[in-house]
Image (cartoon, rainbow over all chains, first blue to last red; front, top):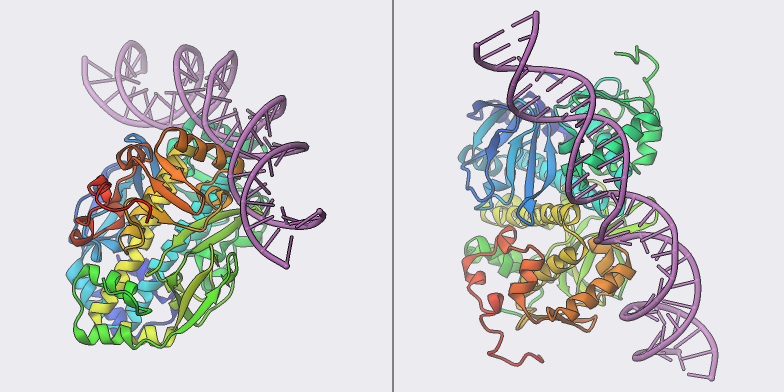
Length: 261
Length: 261
DNA sequence: CGACCGATTGACACAGCTCAAATGAAGTGG
DNA sequence: CCACTTCATTTGAGCTGTGTCAATCGGTCG
């Protein structure tokens, strides 16, 4: 994966479904974009607003969230570099969730007009974006299942597994180790538990020897056990064979390099 | 809404985002379709399979579901007439959930080839389908929030409100009353609770005078109270003004016509 | 009539919540 | 370089919503 250009991770993901024509790659490369930095916890878009551009994550993490009962926060998804956080604003008038930066983050805003234009002109790109949207929906279904039918430690294990896979797929996790600037409260808000209980779960995962967890740094020490505990299978993420064959998952490479770093 | 043709409810929904050209309506009307009947609980599509057509609900209900821990079932969505249950199979190779009939149901299978064709030819139809897909995603986000941050009675109240609105939007609910062939176990599987507890919650809703509940027949007796209890707002369903202005919600018409039918 | 399925009920157990406080780490300003 | 603040993590002690197990009841259908 070519890294270094703003759209490189997006392009990499879009080509999961098949190589794009030079012209289509060019279309992506030429998308007008406004790069903006956000501080930790800064709001990128507010529920109810009607943005005129979409938000591509370049660096760091965003999360979408909603409130229940007026004050109970639920994180509905984590967005990692290469993800477009709110493609739906292209066709839905108002945003049904808020969007915030988990830690410091860099995003690019892509005007709706330009995106609609390439979706109309290139069936291949339209297909690639459809695919992105549908993968996001599959993740939502998995989260519904996670929240509805797994207990706290399983939920946490599952979310950690999911992030590990999604991050390694865009080269942001190495050796089952990744950095993410979340707090245990963020974790709790994504797993539908309280932060107090999230803390106890994290401690239990440490005690079981499944993960090292320095809050901002997560290292999975026993992938197979964690995936089993979290009832995790990466099927729903629809990874292409080329990505699945990368090492790091299934602990194929857990022994090749120094597990301490 | 014109009723009577297989695609009428779909067309009605597609036009929520704006009137379609006669040619586009024609394209929908001419979609090749295979109509099939399913018995209650019969499987329409199995997780892991790779269908070559999409499933349009014509009558009755479908539900998508996944298993956690091998045996705990979670319903991830209810599909009502006019919904396409698995549009994502157009672009994702394998189904990440199973699809079953809640009660007896009639569905139409639409070949991928025909659907891809109209998505490529008509930007307006593509936009309408994008909109459908994004509304589905918004529902998933709401479900994530429901499961993660509301307690049992709130979850049930919320799901009932959602179904009432979605059904009345396609003329399948009158006077806040609708028929749905679910069991309390189905309800439990959608709300992430056990069937025993679902029963207690239903009894409590009855006792509070919020709903009449004859299992297959749900009548909301106090919409405002139920919506408040379920922390429900229909914003995420992205109803067009024309539909929101219909009576029945907000109990505007709770008295105008016969509540028995 | 018997079989089966869904609704209902009761007794009890426990996962996770609430409330409250202590500890620790990181930054800020003097 | 040290007080001071702030925020995240951690711990403890009850409390409660929901699960589990098991039985009963009622309706439907062959």
